[in-house]
Length: 269
Ligand code: G3H
Ligand code: 13P
Ligand code: ZN
Image (cartoon, rainbow, N blue to C red; front, side, top):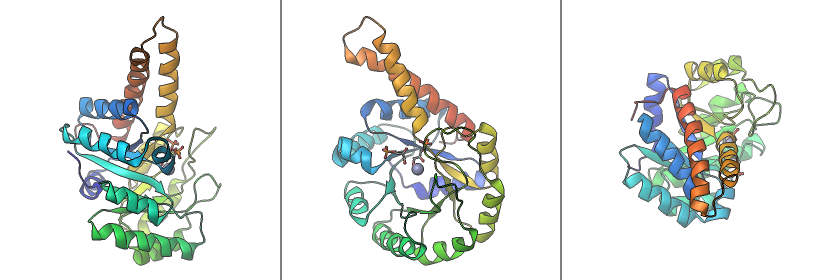
């Protein structure tokens, strides 16, 4: 069933596991995520970025996710990932998203607060939780710990994405700064989110979960599996694209299963 992210993530934090937020832009990826979740009985967050929405239309993506969630025994959240404006957030709320992220982390601190606060006011009117971001990923800098308390108090966000050294995509030698994570947890009790989950060592992820991360975003590893599966499918003497795409789906299922096990959300649905 389709659910709000709030209780799921709070439960994850209490029990010290993390829920995967898996990006999708098409039917095949969504099917793979849900198959993996159902096999391992894991709650799921399925996420779309603005680019996914531009590619596949918000109406199609939300209809796919809502129908899939309605037929599934799992609690499934439909989340806007890295929303950049109030307009995108409104569009997603109109289309039944049950969680939204506003990412103004690239703006000066005060502007980040102002926009995030506006989104919180809008989304909370519809009982939809909001994730904000403090500290820009992939910039070689970390979340400024001295800003955390003020950001959380003044915006009213439900969850906070923090920059700990990961970047979107797979980079060489990616590691998390767990000392900064510890400092952040002294400043706020709201659930913390890790972006850029692909390419990080498993041990860093496990420790981050132990220290308070309870939502982890994964995109690149799924895309890589899609591409790998596509190559396998194309290597067959097959002209039915559905048969070809089955290879992509199978490879993506394996990736999502591995993440669910790593995050500890197996048998938590
Ligand atoms: O932020 C999440 C992504 O990995 C980038 O996704 O290409 O759909 O914007 P995108
Ligand atoms: P990766 O592409 O590194 O998995 O990051 C995903 C992400 O943070 C989506 O918001
Ligand atoms: Zn991200």
